[in-house]
Image (tube, rainbow, N blue to C red; front, side):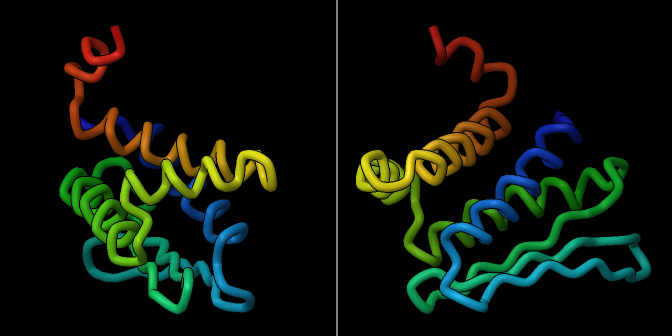
Length: 125
């Protein structure tokens, strides 16, 4: 159901987005282990709201991948970066920071693609 490549891409994009958009000095990324395996926790603040999500480091942890996907969407909404917010923000950044604008759009494209699965292909036509 889930493609590990997409989750690695999503994790990398969230890290990049955090490095770009996070309030100064609030971005952190740490790798830790627990009984269910190795995880990477990414946290940062945007306008003083906390973004936090954990990604499993193994693509065999399907439950962890699904949870990471859901928590990414929820955390982006929590810090007021819903799809509409990101669309508006990316339009604001088009003249100022094209790189951030592209990252914002690509994060949501990946999240939508995973949510819709095979039906994503049909919505693009």
